[in-house]
Length: 494
Image (cartoon, rainbow, N blue to C red; front, side, top):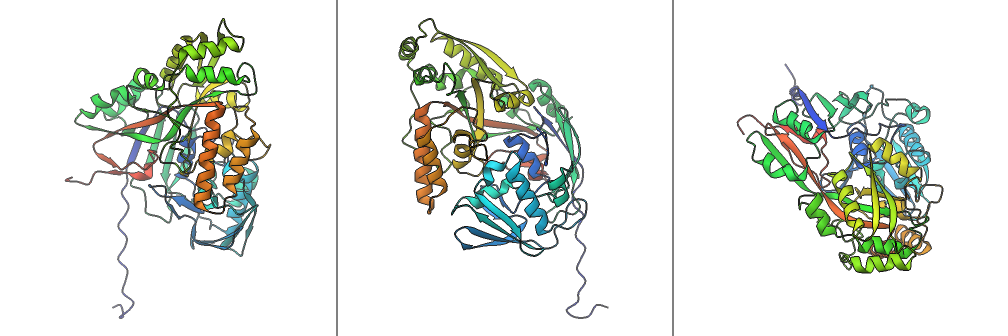
């Protein structure tokens, strides 16, 4: 008989099991520590099912404890993080402060997320269960950047062990590049167990085939539903379509350091030749929002003073003539064929619109595994790109994409060939701001400056759509990312 005060704890009920089958339009570009790996929101979201960070965002983009259960800020350049006790990697070994230090150092040196950690000066272990981070200057945004500092064991971070064990809800069982990947539940994960024991992600590029798998019950969910199919699928009794605006803005990049786009008159002509509302109607079934700037209204730094640029094709042709292109231009437009919703239709419509101002455009739509190396290698003068400020802060985009390339973290994704000292100053001022309001003000000024330079022409705020079996429930997060941890079977009798 158990004595008073020593009652036996009832056993925890076993977690639900089964397999979740997700049909994807395209594969991830890699898993940590890589390579291959590209700074792409979908890839990083998939990695977060396997790897965790010191702090994390919840579904509403609010900061929450991650591997650190608490933190303090003893001075304006120092943060101290106390690690959760008892955390283990998926191979059973315990998490230590040395693992966190090695992971963050590796991120800062080589990984595609180094932009987010550019303000860190040093990381050191304080015993086995605490980590101290010191920044190069007082940096209010540090906590919002740490969710990109994914943590793996020290030997994996230093030696490139692949696949690396993680502490997330799942572990990576298999990845067949170009075909898909399989997650299995991590038995050592400290958080609530995910609803499914296994998650099979299968790449099915064709929209009709991918959605047909869900219609026939051969898959449980499919991403990137074409927007013109939302209404029809919503009327199917066994299906549910979840759609909404995420955080991603699509824009047209004009390489500002190369002819013909080194002439600001040509960039302005391209801008005036585009009709965003027409683009939404013709390529996106009327189900996207024309973008006034490079971030959506929900992002800190959104500038409400910026208006949708009205098309003026007569003025565009006059600018081209003044720039010496009275006979027009012949250009190639590069873009992904499997990254954004209706990306090929968008490329085709952009080419048609530019044809109306005398710019003859050849569309070069590539698999994203070929597209990203193309633009990273500086081999594209004009391309379609998207960016999602997942931290809720415009500094993500500004520092990585629009700051002059420094050879380090800042400007590491600058495929625009842009180098503008005033824009750099505004971005740097935002990073060094001492109050949230001052930071937001500088970000708004930087967004306005970027709009005036016209090296990245905002097009649309993208609408995301996912189709699921009605046997599943999914409450989408703020960024509309489909993560298997968020999907659950509908309770019996519901």
